[in-house]
Image (cartoon, rainbow, N blue to C red; front, top):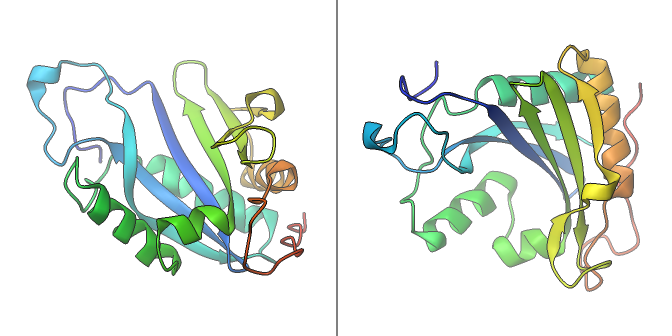
Length: 187
């Protein structure tokens, strides 16, 4: 159940980190622990709410797709567990969910994929992230985005996530598992 009875939801999103030979699917929510009806019906920006699933890198495409589908279905079902402007608490929560020493350790030693479910167009867009290789920042590679219909199966979603991870880059100063890449998910 969504937290806000006044919001007109137009999208849901989730992120997946590949870190220390595991995938971490993050559930997201609208920013703010208390949603003020004075904001109106417009959906607010997203923030991390909870760890939705932790999967081994050899999980099946169906398992990955099911974990992603659950995280998208749970979008904005709970508030994030830190203050809206408390970056230290936010970074600590994220690091604890994935077992990183800190947010910088996570960003330097992981790959990331973002999924956005467009509820109006009934589609999913999957963005692989570049980690300071093509550009000097950590961000989505929009030209490499993968689009699926909203009716895609869990296996199709998992296979697309796997494909997106093959396009992601590691930070050039990566310290963990140097030179290793996660195994591809079997179909």
